[in-house]
Image 1 (cartoon, one colour):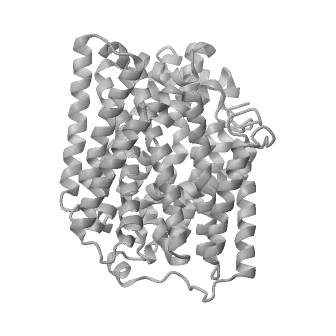
Image 2 (cartoon, one colour):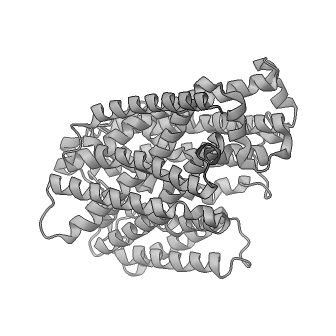
Image 3 (cartoon, helix red, strand yellow):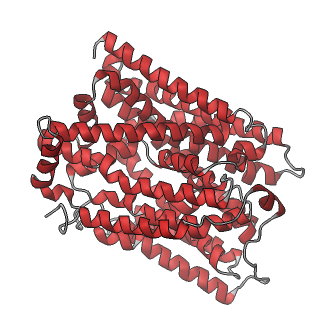
Amino acid sequence: MSGGSLAFVLFSCAVFMAMVAVLSYQASRNEVQTQDGYFLAGRNLGGLFIAGSLLLTNLSAEQLIGLNGSAYGHNMSSMAWEVTAAISTIAMAMIFLPKYLKGAFTTLPEFLNDRFDPGVRRLSVILFMLGYGLVTIPSVLYSGSIAVMKIFDVPGLLGLSEFSSLVATVLVIGGVGALYAIFGGLKAVAVSDTINGIGLLIIGVLVLTLGLMALGNGQLLDGVDRIVTDHPEKLNAIGSERDPTPFGTLFTGMIIANLFYWCTNQYVIQRTLAARSLAEGQKGVLLSGFFKVLVPFFMMIPGVIAYHLYGPGLASIDLAFPTLVQDLLPIWMMGFFLAVLLGAVFSSFNSLLNSAATLFVLDIYAPSRAERLSDRQAVRIAMIASFVIAIFSFAVAPLLYLAPEGLWQIIRIFTGFYNIPIVTIVLFGLFTRRAPAIGAKLVILFHVIAYGLVKFVFDDVVTLHFLHLYAVLFGIEALIMMAAIRFAPKAVAHGPVEPTPAAALAVDLTPWRHAVPVSLLLVSLVVAVYLLFSPLGLAQ
């Protein structure tokens, strides 16, 4: 890329990002003075902003690179992580969200405190904060920085080593992303996510279209014909035991992993807790489910196209999408693409920062004080916490480069330390009336010990796919909760979550009248997509 081309790319990227920043500031400048404004966007988010923020929070550079790489190197089986998530969005909209909004909860640990006791709240906060600080936030920064480096050859442009370029990229991406979370609160995050989400969809359609045309020598339909006739096995989503995501896992650990992510993970559900009404929350969550069904077309088919164009000879499967972008996008689109790519990274990063600060202020700092925090104090402490967490993540993220295999393995392993016990105790808190706090504490303790032993001591002995392992542990932990209810039940059974006066004033709890038919349509689309990408459909 010549100096003039690079200047144009950077200029057009800066213009788009500046536009997003101005619009986000305009939308959020009156929302950051209060706790509800900073943490929950004044409980005033509409369905479109919720859906846009959920989409960008979930999709980042890691998915752009990873999903396309998986399709290039294997087949469509990894679409399970995206398509089946639509079922979990239905569960969130129809089951979890009504209960969360009735209680006017700001954080998931606050809900666990209501259902169990402060001890369970503290344990859940520790799990979330360790997971976010040591794993999720650094990995988002690392994967985003690596994507930018690969696509735009940052080491060559700066004349630095790869590691030095990575550090510089992490600081720039993390610094800009942190500004949204620290000074804009959740409303700025949601608005910027929505705008960048539209940009991501535009880029997805463009890369898909240009890729099919390249495959068909300029003819779109010829490209479609070639992709369904040459190497149809690449279009198979029914994964075998040798594939990244075996089909059987959809009915075991995949269900639990998606329930955790979409129904109990603080940094995902926080924007749904900010809904101005239950109906708007349900619209936003279900709309995000429709986006998840579209993900294979925009974030995996390009990987299949790359296989047809380049064959299996790329040095790494992770180069499939970057190579395709470099070859297909005209130079005048590269600035927009860079802005959208950065926006996707910013979204996940600043959402995590905002949620981590929310957890720290409301579930650690505030409960430790005798007097109630004022709005000004809460916002100030949240900004300081966001800054400290951001600096810590800047230090951890580049370390992934120094030992990528070991640290990437830790990332995958560590998520399993907290997702299954959180899902288990939340489900029992929602659907049983005498689940005791001791049961929840035993579940957390058992899971951390058992999972640690399986992954670090008996890893060579236990050959189960990690998603099947999730299901086994979930079953054991459900039995622990049932035993606790049987032998040490809660002395006073709690009733259903009732609307608090604050909740009654904050949101309208009337359900969306189209929620049920839309949910049924969404389920039908999930089945249809699997039939399409199967030996009964395109993968003949």
